[in-house]
Length: 248
Image (cartoon, rainbow, N blue to C red):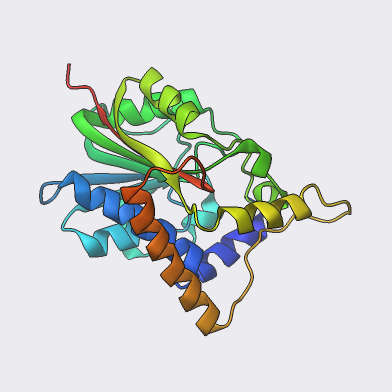
């Protein structure tokens, strides 16, 4: 991620509709897994820590995180300062089978991440029968200047992500697209802005919104979440996958 994007991320992730909607999808998936009290939950590529803070507020679990960037770590709160570490998801500094859940948001597609190696590491640190939750950007043809700014190089389909996860020894429980109602709008904007010509560092799509619009978009995202849970759609800007590490 471009250095300036970390400050933007920490500011936006507390109130911006997109990050709140992403987080609600992840929290719903974690609730569905019915983790025991004091379960060890690991955020692989935790960024500035907002998602893990939400997970810890939502459930009586113990939270851990890792991110490759010291700039991201500089934004961590007190809990993550205590339990987090600066490390790559390609080489996690943990013993085997120590976590009950590993989740990761927008990380496997990032520059410098080897998806196969990272998934193998996630499997290694999960206990047998432990769960995996992934949320990742969809469809490579949607890649744009936003992806360049956040150093995202790979986008996934449901099937490509399913194959990658299964290759690392996971059994897929669910996989589907999210933000399907937004897909036509996102596709149109991304294609219009694709590969801008000009100098300077690329910038993400983040921009301040009036409160009424931010609230309205969050409401639509919740409708989208309900729809996608009930009706599997063949498109969306994001892929959500839930899996378990095989017990044998």
